[in-house]
Length: 217
Ligand code: GAR
Image (cartoon, rainbow, N blue to C red; front, side):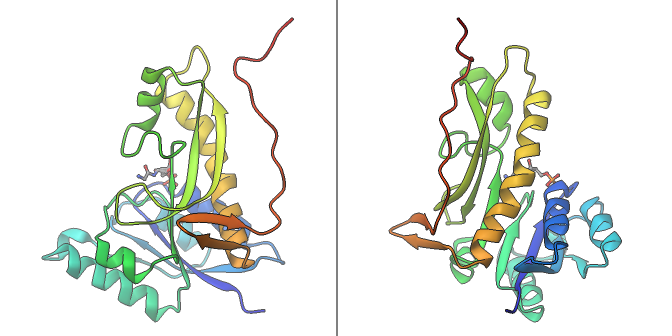
């Protein structure tokens, strides 16, 4: 079967891109990375793409007069590479409703919180400040409201008493690296449908309850 072609959009270090590169390297992978795009020339993720021998390109938003123009360049590049699923992997530009509609249900994002809690930036500091017992990450289909849309995969990690935003971020990031490839895999296998703005996952396994702090005698 033809592999699903991924377009990965990044702005920074690209550790989530690396997780996708590694997952797509499996012989039974159902997807392949067709193109990596960065809006920043200094994004380390571009080096990762180069090292993996992947097509990659900088599309600088500042070189465009308008958001629409920038997004038109993005879409044209993605379409030229036959991309079927766009993955926002640490892409730090807000996209317009027109772009989101153009890629509806073919555009996913990874966000470092358990949505719908803590949309936006500084999610880990805000989670610690709020005193929640669990933080986490979410992979979701993108809708025009920022950090919203049907949820595909989430991972919860405990918030620990001595956490700083940095420590918590590192713990969440490890789970991001599992969740993003899992979501892509489920989509590539045709197991995800959006029904009434919720995702239905075909043959999803059960997951146990978590309690934090641990129950002690
Ligand atoms: C990740 O933690 C991702 O969830 C977050 O940026 C980081 C990118 O890391 N994305 C957002 O905050 C999107 N609003 P990476 O470049 O190493 O993958």
